[in-house]
Image (cartoon, rainbow, N blue to C red; front, side, top):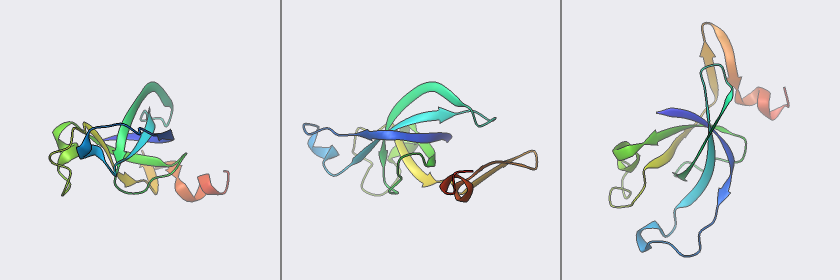
Length: 102
């Protein structure tokens, strides 16, 4: 899995029938120091993530493990919304602090 920040949404009116009802998010990946990387990716979302939230992204075949998604052409899926990240006993990210603007 990788860590990413939700940067926006992607709307596609015309798409494969198997993708009907799938919400798409534009994600920007984050490194171990909490810095945004220049890489973006579109991923399906099954957890209801919102703009600016940090999320866990499953990629490849693992993105289709969730029930009902095994026959969909997805190679990236948001599978979790992150509450906190701690690296070397220091807080790298806290959703509560982000919501308060800290």
